[in-house]
Length: 398
Image 1 (cartoon, rainbow, N blue to C red):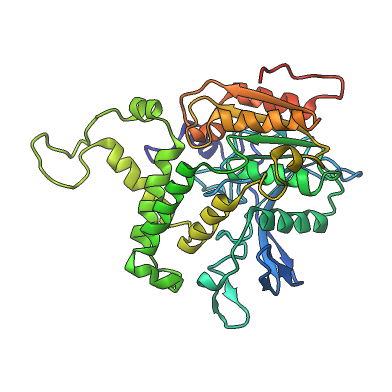
Image 2: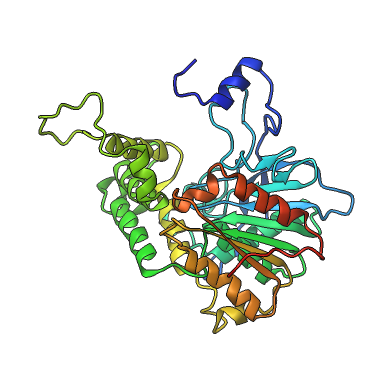
């Protein structure tokens, strides 16, 4: 058994059976939309594919669906395992499953890889039917609005009449907010975590450094590269830099401090990794390039930069005017990418617009990625919000 296999997976491997609360082995499916799709930019593609997974059963009234929206580097695989040999479950497996906070015994959970992605959904690495070659940078620019509209077409295809909730963190939280704005009667609840109404200049700057790392790599070739080639060095550097923004100084110090690698020599003057944190970042970069497309990274980070809820409406309150859903916004104290004040501002604007909204701020030192990590406090929040009736009121200070 590999030494780095976590305890949960080790137990599962030995027993050969899913653990309690595990949705088990799941298979992704593809939704193929065969009609032309017009992007917000006005550009058109003849159709698209969204790869998605579902867990649990859609009820007779078709209103127990919970849509999960993923973040920048996420995908459709948010729970369960793709085979009994998998070493890693879906990225939100700790939250989703029988008896968990998002209970698949009660809810029909759906998660799709976004339009513009690279995990089975149509994006820059997909073949352009007009040329028979990958779109590359000829692919239309994607916005968060485009991602949401494509997912709504998927939900219509699946026969969902109303969403019990839409849940997402970071970029997923942006999508969740837009669902409530664009389809107010379709969405009953929204949980948006570690997110924002628009990125700060600093967040945009981090994205631009990542894009430049990719585009300055000679192998990028203006977006024209083979599936097994491309700007692997640039993409790895982009991921290393971005990953630093997802964690906190405290969590990095606790995990690595200034500990040196076993192979490092105290008197070695070399540019090979000397510190454990260097090796960790290189591992993050290398693992990322094996599952993500560089052009998709360019497109999705640009979609993040362009997202601005208030811009088209004049104010955030006006943007929320049509919302009918009840909303829970969750911020994390150590998140310096989308810090608590940006999350709190969303709930305040919803309240000023006369909407039902709550804000919870969790004290954690894990950084932006806090919403992805083990947290009983977060699970309790999510479970309570999904279960609550009209007479129950969350009591969190804003």
